[in-house]
Length: 88
Image (cartoon, rainbow, N blue to C red):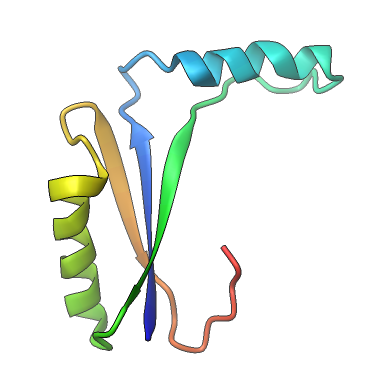
């Protein structure tokens, strides 16, 4: 089993109301050093294929067709090493 991460974020020019709400709340909680917050989403996929190039291409197709709205969102695919014990 191979693990692939797909991180999806709004494009920089798209307004992010949820990120702005978090940014306004953090100083009230004592976190005064935050200057910007952008909210996104992460998908963790387990795929049966073991070839890294195939894994990346498959995950990119999934992101383009379903996981991300490519009109307003960018995505990044990360293929984790086979021996990775990262608990993302």
